[in-house]
Length: 335
Ligand SMILES: [Zn+2]
Image (cartoon, rainbow, N blue to C red; front, side, top):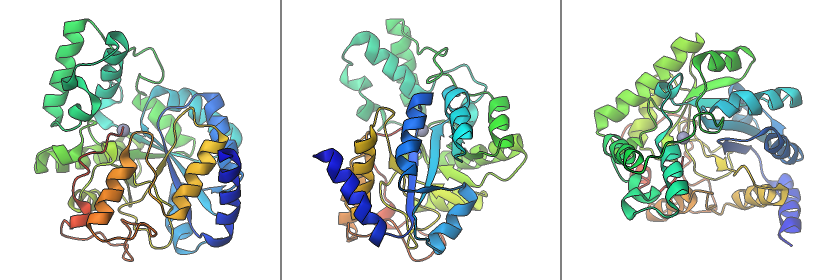
C-alpha cells in the first residue's frame, strides 16, 4: 500500500512541481549507494552543485536532484564516490575541517559506541541532552564517559573514521564538489556568537586552501542555524548554504537557506519515494533524526503556510538581521 502510494504520488508530482530536491546523506556502502541512485534516477536529473542556481531559476520539465554527503567519513571516499563515478552521478561532500586527517572520532560516533557498549545510556549522555550543550562541555562529557567505561569508537570502520585531506583533494580532482561543514561538529547555535562565526570562517578557509579552489557551499552541523550565521557563511565565500529543512526546492528557495531531504542508509525504494512525495506535497517530513517537526513548529510560529517552502524567500540575498523564522532549532537532533 505505502509502496504504491509513494510511486503514484511521485508520478503525479512530476506534472505539477518545478524545481527538485537536495538530498542529505551521511554514510552509505556501495550497494546502498546504487539503490539510492537507482530510485532517485527514476524521477530526477542528477545535477552538479554549480548547476543548482540555474535549475532553481529556470525549471525544466524533469526535476533535479543534488546529492550531498555530510561529515567527511572515509566511506565517502572508499565506497560512495567510486560507485557514483561508475554511475556518472555528481555529488557534494561537506567535511568537518578539523576532523580531516585527525585520529579522533566525531563526538556522536563516540556516543554511539557508548550506547552500544552500555545498552542504555544515562540521561546526561542521551543524544538530545548532549545536543543542548556548548561544544566544549559536550565533548568533555563524552570524553569522560568513554574513559570511565573504557569505550572508544572504532576508527577502522570506514563509517566512523574520517577521510584524509589527500582523499578530499582526490574527490575534488575527480570532479566532486567539496564544501564545509564547520571547523568542528559544534552545533553553532549553542556556541558563543564569535566562536560560531570563527568556526564558519575557518572551515570555509581551510577547504578553500586545501582544494585550491573556492569553497562554494556550507552546511550547518546538525542543521541548526540563524540568519546571521547563514549570512556570514555567504560573506566567507559560500555561494550556497544548506540546512536540513526537509522540503522541495524551487524558484522561491533562497540559496542561503537551502532545504535538504534526509535519507537513511537502509531506506528502501518505496520509503525514499514516499518521503519525496510527502516533501513535494508541502508537508514537513520528520527526518530520520527528528529535524522536520522542529522546522514545522518554527514555521507555524512565524505564520508561514506549510504548503509553501517555509523558510524560503523571494530574495536570493541573505537578510541582514536575525528574523524570528531563523531562531535556533533547539530540538533538532541531527548529524
Ligand atoms: Zn554532520
